Amino acid sequence: MGIADQLAVNPLFEGLPSEHHQTLARIAITRSYQKGQMIFAEGDEGTGFYIIQSGRIKVFKISPEGKEQIFHIFGPGESFGEVAVFTGQGFPAFAEADAQSSLLFFPRQAFVALIRKDSSLALNMLAVLSRRLQKFSALIEDLSLKEVPARLAAHLLYLCEKDLDANKISLDISKGQLASLLGTIPETLSRIMSRMSRQGLIRMKGSHITILDRQGLKDIATEGKKLT
Amino acid sequence: MGIADQLAVNPLFEGLPSEHHQTLARIAITRSYQKGQMIFAEGDEGTGFYIIQSGRIKVFKISPEGKEQIFHIFGPGESFGEVAVFTGQGFPAFAEADAQSSLLFFPRQAFVALIRKDSSLALNMLAVLSRRLQKFSALIEDLSLKEVPARLAAHLLYLCEKDLDANKISLDISKGQLASLLGTIPETLSRIMSRMSRQGLIRMKGSHITILDRQGLKDIATEGKKLT
DNA sequence: CGCTCCGTTGAAACGGTTCAACCCACGTGG
DNA sequence: CCACGTGGGTTGAACCGTTTCAACGGAGCG
Image: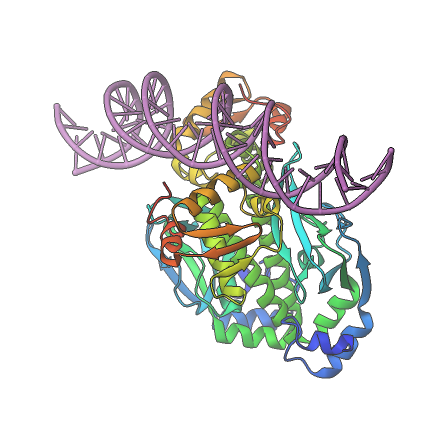
């Protein structure tokens, strides 16, 4: 499948005339990264943004003491780094390949020129950024208003919806990473998960989790019930 | 000053040809709100967005137990509610007048039509949303990575920069609201502020705060130093 | 005056982190 | 083939920052 065809099914570019996909494919640059390799650092100049062809990218911040908060883990078809393109300031966070990854890089200048010409592209971009903003709102809400069990419950339900559901989840990230994504540490996560198992809400076998009591998890996610 | 003139100096619309300002002024609807009056609720359909002419608007979420987290307090010239316009989903949070306020309302349909015609407007909008996204990143970072003293120190320094600086700040919101903005409660805020005074970092008289030791605050904001 | 609202202060309770020990699966090299 | 080291995950105990609950003080106002 050519690059233009990939772009045609991306939320950012869907609905655009196909000659645009050609143009976009022309300005895109393919880049490969090893697991653990950094893509950009906080403060780096935002010279463009990325779309993921394959692999997985971790976007995160680091506190002075070295603690890391994962903002998001992006997979194939998703884009990141757009913000810096439009603010003209540096990247607001770090990005690192979480697995061997292949990315498409869109240089800022060329992309802005394109957007200037086609307002549908601009509207798509606005939609993507708006949705990201909503995600961030939810994350802020969770971090400040909810405690860890609620965040974990919500996340498990989310995973099982977006995945092929059926109450079976296979964690594709390490539990340490999941902890950071939830804004906590591995020890706490481990304790809470074992409490959830003990109460018959979930079953845990390695990185495979089965949801046994969906309603129970929902109650905890909304903090209507407490996890004893 | 006419509405079109106000729009011309707004970040969203600056740099646009002045006939656009006329058009925008025509589709805008003026609305007034009393202090405490709700502008929209979380989940309400996003039929348009707002720009503040005068007054102050509080955007926040509420947890099931009634705790509120303020996301942002907007003042004259700022806009809010744009996200729902582009996602097509409901508003992600509540908005309420924090003082007698006059707003300009831009209906969704008309505005999108305008954006479709003029890509500079789209680019301005992208810049505004991107900057908001950066703000959110910072808030997430603060909430998850830093403790309350650091958040407070950072906020004080921020206020004193954006205001007429000179180390003097007059809190234009109540301390209870400031607490919610920082993701904490009035009691905790009070204790931390009195500790800061005791250490000679700030002086406090009612809602007037003087920064005495800027460097000291910076050290605490970056968590390089602790507040004893 | 007495009411309410906001801010402050204290003591106790709680959720989460830290530190340390430990287990286990896995890969490596002797 | 087994000893060894390594890294992820788990568990326990002490610790710490924040919240909770309760009481109190002062400012503003009918």
